[in-house]
Image (cartoon, rainbow, N blue to C red; front, side, top):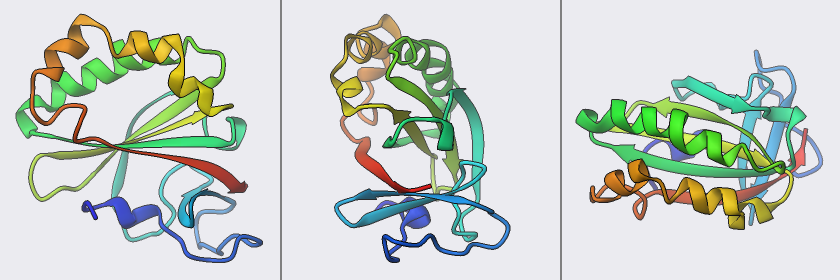
Amino acid sequence: MTKGLHMWMYAGARETAPRIAGHGSVEIFDHGGERLVLGDNGMPADGATTATLLFTGGVYAAKAGPYLFRVGMWTPEEDRDDFLAWYETDHLPILLENPIWDGCRFIEVAAESGCQFYVLHQMQDPAALRSNERARSRDTDWFHRLKEKEWFDEPFTRTLYRRIFG
């Protein structure tokens, strides 16, 4: 398991949300028994992981659709600024043109080396993942330039969850 991935996992019952001090209401998402727990601020609610919200786009949390698409991405430190600029100014705006792609939170967590990011996209329907907007967001000059780097795209982890609570 990649360092930091444990931060949102919860093995509790489906019927009730865990009581997490300082987080108020929570959202719980499920993928085949693997749970993600997010506090009412949209951040990991485990209290053990230091996560920094770098930017957001669109709407997210309880205001957004029931599907959460988590993408885990590691980059070398020297590529951090270029990668963040691409995601925030090139990739994400194209995704948000899709009316069923509600929004996202872009989070950084501590890594032993390089930079570890998680993007929590929310959408109304998983069909957004097969949309023209997603295809266009992965076919820009900037995307193709980054694609030449061995750490980009294929090594990213991608998991689709469905909200079961919150």
